[in-house]
Length: 232
Image (cartoon, rainbow, N blue to C red; front, top):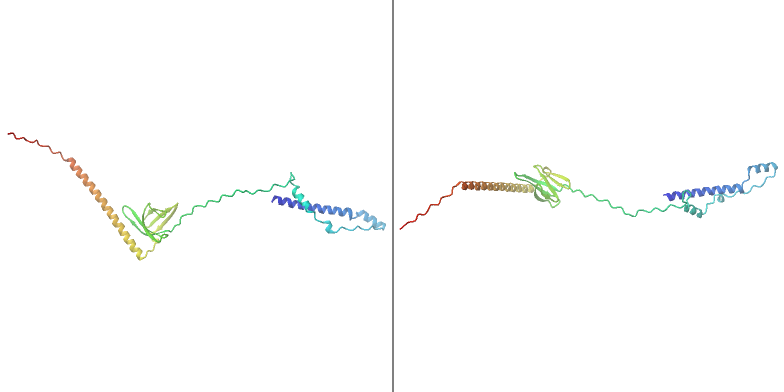
């Protein structure tokens, strides 16, 4: 941009110089002074006027070499040298890091929720995996999503700071899905009842063992009777 401005300034100055030079030549060679015209008119012997130069000769453009010299030695540069060419930075810019894409929500559908005394289980349909139905518990991971909370109305899934609350009311079940849900819910209830019964048995066995140990510890050891010898 700076080189272009200097070049334009030089061209304008050269044109102005050419015009001044042409006018000066016209005055010196082709135009008579006003006093000579008046004296000639009074004497009655008018002097013939010299022909005026044509406009093409008055405003003839300067040769190209003049502009090259002006460009090579700028008038407004202290050093009378053209500015050095600008060198573009060859260092490539580092590409901006693409932020990690946020995980897509709406990947699951709540089929059913079972709230047992000792655990909470939810039946989820994976919409991105051929509608596969799986049962999950709190804290488990499914397709990189963590089951954060299971409530009677919804299941809360979390991944990379994104929370997706899947509500049971958002699901419209078909008859077949309702039958599958009922069977799985019944099976979960049976499993929970069996675990509870097994825990009761273990607790009862522990109490019985403790009672036997207390009874055994309270009994006194039997004394050995001496054996009598028969003398002949």
